[in-house]
Image (cartoon, rainbow, N blue to C red; front, side, top):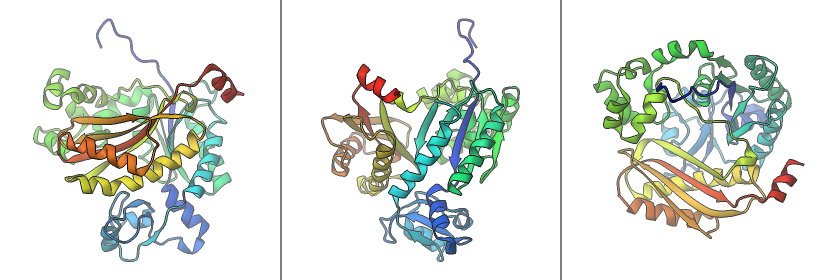
Length: 355
């Protein structure tokens, strides 16, 4: 680290992830489905897409964002149920209230996922995570997994280690050893194409990636290479941002297979839109929206964002922005995101929100 830079402050961050949240709610509410493969999402036609599925379905290679017709080919006994976002929002609100019992610094990522900064809490972070999970189960009969670490990057990675219904802690003293053995595909932004490129360079783990300088990674991957230099070392200075500080709300999806046409992108839009609207109703129901935007990341890792002021957040308006963004390059799309930006809160609004 350069002499004129200081290390980011050490934090205690929990990443909490509800296990197969939508599918778990459906199985809880319909006990006869227990032990059966269940998916939640689109219809059985070629345009339907699964929002999520339970672990019984995943054993057949079924996963979220998979076209429903393909999921049914892999698992003919798959039970596909329509989404019930009113129920998911209600249960998410119960979970969110429990998280706020431990810290005011709660940053929701979606209805079923959040970061919690528990640095100021007197108890050990692993004990806090266990208590959170116990209270959530008592209140909802749903399980959650948790990762505990000094930053958001590591906490999210850790939450996948002991899924489902488990937790894992990465302590500061263990970060170097943990990252040395971690497969590079566990880092955000590493998809199949990048993983194959790194494999050709003899890189399969973060430890092997650390042999490259920041300049070398920048030359290979552009601006993202500089981020990759930090990520493979477990470095992440992003703070946990509580809801009241939110300037925008968005969701996005990175696709296993690149989307090659505008029609393929449009087919993905309704699911993203439905989830964004559900999150908006849950997280920011009273905020005034000033802009809407669509974000695209292309197969070569270039990005573009199309943003318009004065438009309502409707599916038709997002489709129009998507069309503009895709037309800028026509390249295959690996990530698609939708979002809204909020008007700045006035002092009196902020005070009311805190009362």
